[in-house]
Length: 554
Ligand code: HAS
Ligand code: CU
Image (tube, rainbow, N blue to C red; front, side, top):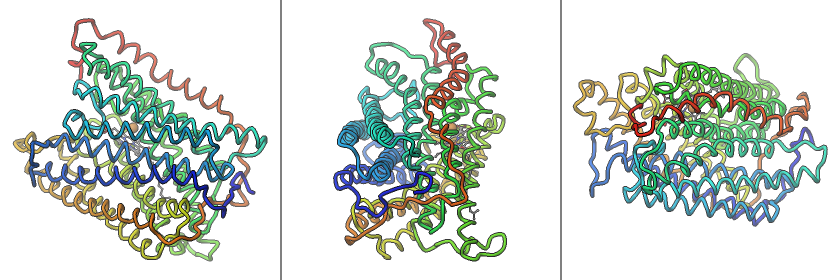
């Protein structure tokens, strides 16, 4: 064992844990498929190319698309992935109590997802995935959201419990990197979801039932974005886990540095939460100083991504040179381009370079004034979550499903996977590319054709909107192909597939024990959150004069 990367590498995956993991993965891909149908229809409607029958509206299918893909697909895939790796790296199977919590979480989330989806389909929750007030959904939509969140907390308990028991019986040993990262990711998630749970339980549910007449809009938006930004890192961190831990193994190389990987995750924990104001830079009601402070912190949270870029380059270069690569970029040729388990996540990394640059533009206050509420922002998150994260998850499915179910990735499925990745890249090039461009021309996001068609600039936007719809249609082909590939993986021939856990390079330093002193890191996180939020939040609570309409301020 080197540096806590010990695993029961070739042992068969536990049969009971298999059901739990596969249940999550299957629901994830079903959500992807349904969300994909809504996505392509939404794009065609927005482009003015089709109108929907039976009074189905643009905002309704946009809501279905956002909720099913951004919230449901990601959350299920992530929890399935984390549970699988925790089972694998902490003693080779989940403890009965952890497995039970995992199932409780799964069912709570699934009941919530079902209720939420029905509400959206009934047009009773057409409030988009960010559900800003004063748009109001049926109370059952918010209850459904609460069920999903509470479900994820149960999955968190499953992971924390397994980790605690393992630590007790393995005193002095370094926690395997996968489980360490799973624990940090779940900690971040729980801290973040406290915000959304607070606004849903204390504001939206009473208001939508009509128990109270009004709610404080600024408070609800602030609590939402307190959650909304760490939410995007909750998507990104599992993708980084795949990059740090499994990609080195898949290419036949080594993890560059275990300590660096752990440190980057700790930095995500500390800096992900106190930055939500970068989604509210254009909102009145938050003094400039607090926006400025959170922008500075936003730039701090870029650092762990730069560290990750560095580590990935190092892993690839070390591997290439060990194979005799020469010159500055000779190592690129040595990488296994024909292996979808590498190719798809690698393309995700490549796309993350412009995607991250777009994020820096968004975060720069003055430039945010140009892009905010335009299609540019939709372009940004289709590169980040819908390409970098999605392609990484797709790539991971090609080893995760076979490793967990005791099957093999056949050359045919591998080839289909490569095709799927290329289709995705082409579709996203057109769709996200034109979103960025149309956004710069001022085309608003989340706006129905009938609303913008008479705008004087609509003629400039039109070609881009059509290109978006074409890109979206290509992406839909990608979604269907991915769904097919998932089914093919579930029915692939039986055989042995290793759960790929990389080993750390011999030259790497041992990570310091301090990195696992949770009291220190959670304490620091709490202090930063209090510094960034207390004063502006108190202001928001106080400046709502009784009897006034708080929503006039947005
Ligand atoms: Fe963002 C809006 C700022 C990252 C998702 N973002 C959004 C929304 C979503 C989202 C969903 O400051 C819209 C929310 C809504 O509906 O309103 N974002 C940032 C910044 C980053 C960032 C500073 N975002 C993400 C990630 C997301 C995501 C990740 C999902 C997974 N974002 C914003 C801001 C807004 C925003 C504002 C509000 C806009 C507005 O006005 O509403 C940073 O974390 C980005 C850092 C990343 C990098 C890139 C590092 C590169 C790496 C790849 C290395 C490549 C290799 C391969 C090794 C600096 C790690 C190389 C091989 C070769 C051969 C070259
Ligand atoms: Cu953000």
